[in-house]
Image 1 (cartoon, rainbow, N blue to C red):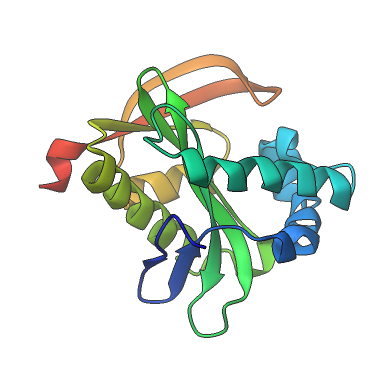
Image 2 (image 1 turned 45 degrees about the horizontal axis):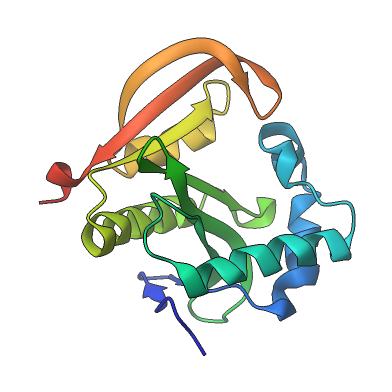
Amino acid sequence: MQIVEPIHTSTLILREFTNEDVPKVYGMSLESGIRDWIPDQVYRNEDHAMEILEYLMAQYRSLHSPASEPCVLAVCLRDSGRLIGHVGLSPLRGCAEIGYAIEESEQRRGYATQAVSAITRWGHQTFMLPTIFGIVAGANTGSCRVLEKSGFALIKEQSGSLHGWQGVIRTYESSASNEE
């Protein structure tokens, strides 16, 4: 039984993860972009990936708000249903933080921007989240561009550590008032 209704864009479907997604999620976790920018999402093996997906799937059943528990969805191509990444909202300072990744072979096609825009709208409208933050390494220019194209405004740059990476950290925000 589905709890979170799929979110459709012109070329994507954002849907709940299923057990069948484990091999693909594990494979994507080994790509260089994940290893470089979000190494805590590199899984040891398929069993480890399954543990993470089971946790994420359990969150669908108890979802009250991404400001209090994470909601991470599979990003799939609309025409084939093929899984190509993930996008989600997780708690951060009483609001939510967006996270996303698209497999390397599907990058630079606008999929991340579509997924981020769609889940940001969903978060603001469905859960009345006043603010959604995006926090990325400044050197991750592709991810910075995704947030900017999705309507997030840069609010802060500072030196620090993010997912074990040291350097300039950029904080973006999307406000519900911008959605109106």
